[in-house]
Amino acid sequence: MSLIRSSRAFSRIARWTLKKELTFSGNWIKRPVEIPNDCVVLYAHFEPYKRVSSYVFSALESYRRAGFDVIFGSTSELFTTDISQLNAHCAGVLIRPNFGYDFSTWRDMLRNLNFLRGKSVLLTNSSIVGPLTPMDSIFKGLRAEDRRIVGLLESQEFHRHLQSYFLFFPRRITKGVLWRLFWKLLRDLDSKDLIITNYEVNVSDFFSAAYDSVAIFKVKTRRNPLEEVFSEIPEFPFVKRAVIESGTIENSRWPTPPPRILNNSLVQDLLKSADQNRKDNSASDDMDSSEGFRRIS
Image (spheres, rainbow, N blue to C red):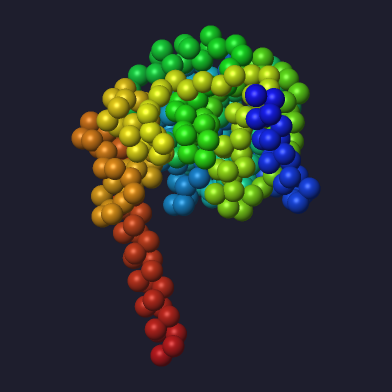
């Protein structure tokens, strides 16, 4: 059965290889010279306001303290002050064009680092805010993992799969041919829905002929498990940024986070910066409108 799932996943992923050429157009602000640790975090970042939020730096420092080398890839234009701070936190910093979403960012970092063969690799991104709770036991479990892909949560949407904002691949997998093949086949898709249905949903199945996968936390729902995680798993260490930013919007599809999350300092900082960014954008739009009227007159 696992061989059938793997072959189906392979066909879904490989079909895009013939339709789209592979391109790389990124710039290493800080190219990794050496990666001494056995465990590496590849952190995919996007920020529409051209800055690195405090929760991102907090996460990078958490991974560093846990013994991971951190390689940071962003599809945003960043301020010089943020780049300087990233250089202090990270073994490598890559800036690339904004296409292909997180999977393409991870791919471009890996293809330029010999796929980090023989390293344990944690893929994560800036769509999650945290850690909000201690992760010592989680990091210890990841280091002890030998032959399974590990995610924080599994979803039953479409079919059973690990959600891609936190995926751990032990060194046994990164040494193998399937690891390199997956990233060589991956192409830049223009739609987030296509990314989910072709890559996120299929990554576990792609490897399933040779490796099992497991979620650290379980939520009993057929919907997106992040809609239920607040009530079922108080110790869950992250919250989706989209939940925070839309939590005060009427008719949001996301549930309002409980006070223990909303009162967290990282979340409070994000809410304040999001509010300030909205004000800045509004002021900029008003100025553009005013300038336009003056030119017309």
